Amino acid sequence: MTTKSRERTRHTKAGPESSLTVSRPELLVDNTDLAFRQLIYDTLAFASRVQEVRNRLGQRIGLTGTAFTILISVRHLQGDDGIGVNQLADHLHLSGAFVTIEVNKLVKEGLVTKRTNPSDRRRVLLTVTQKARDLLQSLTVIQRPANDALFADLTAEEFHILRNLMSRLVVTGDKSLALLDYLASQEGQ
Image 1 (cartoon, rainbow, N blue to C red):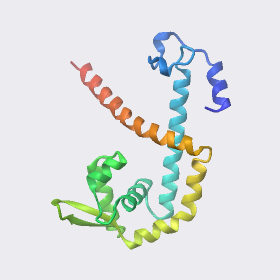
Image 2 (image 1 turned 90 degrees about the vertical axis):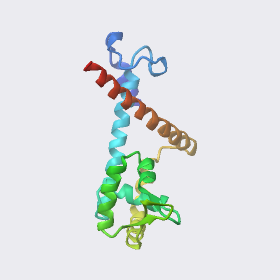
Image 3 (image 1 turned 90 degrees about the horizontal axis):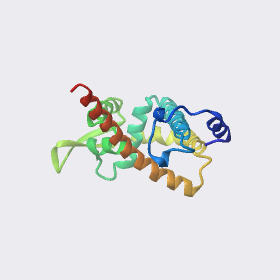
């Protein structure tokens, strides 16, 4: 939290306890949820900026941010044999159906190839084409400094901690969504 954010949090009056948006003591500071809410706002702002960086990198090579993310993930995960759609979807925390639609667009653009998985003929393996490798390689000239700038304030230790925290928070985010779905289903009963 920046000094400005701390000052904003410190000078904002909290409402009654019943208006708290969290109840876990670990998330309350001075018995208020102000720091928690600032964390959420800062997280949303950072996520928006990460998404915009992806969008702009994708635009540089004629892709949407999502298509760029999928393409670069295929390149990094394909190994010698290729990567399956479900593995790719799991890695990106996206649905298999959505990834399939996006991959088909990349296939039409000549950036990804699909071949039948020899160990399960119902599935396909994805690999990037030479055209995709060339595009992604040409992009590193701006991608590297953009990513460096995005995380410039982190030490190596903080980067390691952040990676672990984000991985855990994706899981708890999924649990929170499942809880919201369950609670919504209970409202109608």
